[in-house]
View 1 (cartoon, one colour):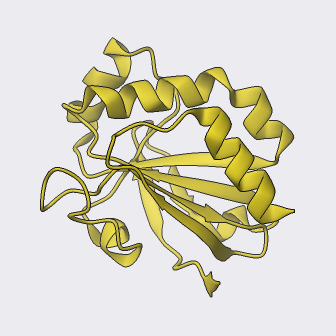
View 2 (cartoon, rainbow, N blue to C red):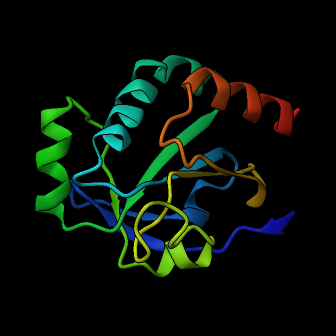
View 3 (cartoon, rainbow, N blue to C red):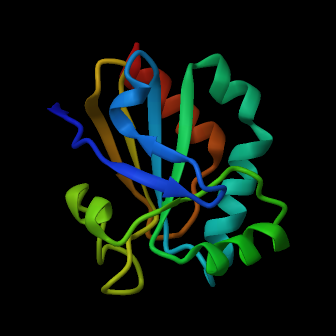
Length: 146
């Protein structure tokens, strides 16, 4: 396990997020192709439906996309997604090794990075099928963190 690279990104609601500010809590980074990727938005909508279970595991999901605010908020609204997306210029996706792992060379793949309360990267999962049941994510997180 490595110390997760720190970053600061602004989200679609204008809030700034610094990874190190989440120390003491578990974080699940969700990288996706974002705008124009329907399954990426459905993935986040389904995670939101399990919000209580993620909270029970002290697991904060931070979705990260390489879009402009306007590009992703239109897709968020169309899919009833309310969790703000963090807007990356590609630096964070590159740092976490997810760039070019999906269907498009210059975009992140459909991937998740689990970071524990001490800020250590504990798991990386790549899902080329563009979908993973949120219950599977929770089960994986619980196993890795136990």
